[in-house]
Image 1 (cartoon, rainbow, N blue to C red):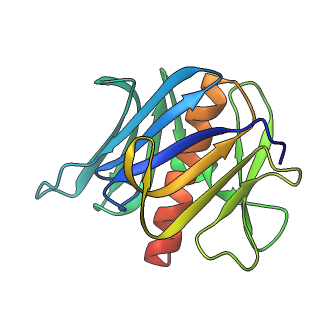
Image 2: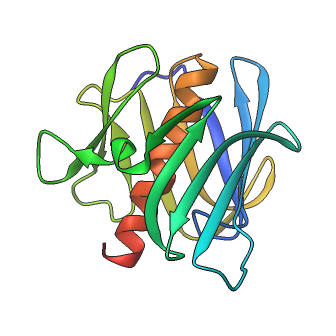
Image 3: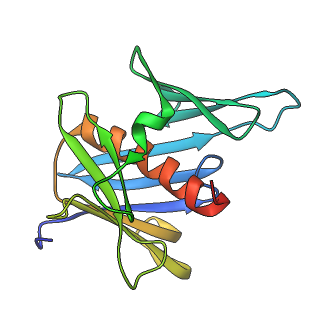
Length: 171
């Protein structure tokens, strides 16, 4: 990856779908995402993804509490499985962007919990072995990206959330 990277830090909970906050800058613009999944005693569970404060940018509708249902991104509903479709190799899962691109989150060999987007990485997610002091405070992971596209960032963050959830829970 080039040296012209934007850093987005993961703070809050390490649960990818609840309490996880992504905060940083892309091309000098502040970036903030928060994933909120209230624990309620029903078979339907909803994750709200807030962008730049309390503006809802996307939703995940989970069935039976933990199974993938529908994702709503903007006004478009798609199966959540479209964000983690089988990739071109056993260590990857693909997602399709709104503008028609097909990208993959791929596990990085030798780095547990690390992922790259596509063959020539345009983004890398890495977990820290323990919380680390960063410019935004204690963080447990970092997303480094070399693109300036708000919609791609949202779609990549949603797909990353699902990849991490699947890998943590063995689905």
